[in-house]
Image 1 (cartoon, one colour):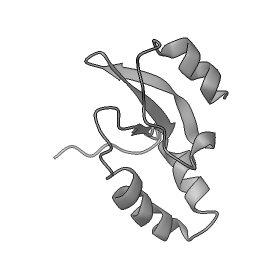
Image 2 (tube, helix red, strand yellow):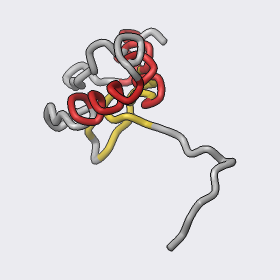
Image 3 (spheres, helix red, strand yellow):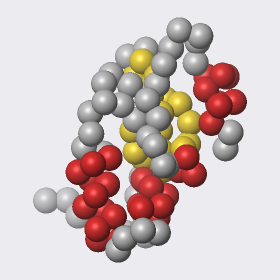
Image 4 (spheres, helix red, strand yellow):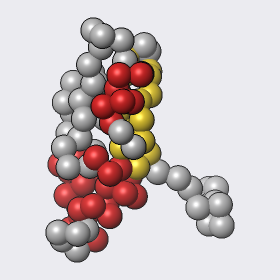
Length: 92
């Protein structure tokens, strides 16, 4: 996906978002909440990218603390994941 083209098409000239460095391959697009735009990334792809340099367990730990857990302002990126339709849902 061409991130620059997406930004040009989805943001007004005065709007800004924060991009997650090193996760360009996982970029999915722009979402809005309460009128504020933010970048959206594929969670599983982010872990795949980190796993190129470390174990998957280390990648998850690093991601949860340093990426997902990092507040960088009102336009902090979001990380999306999908449920597996074959997994059983447990209700307590």
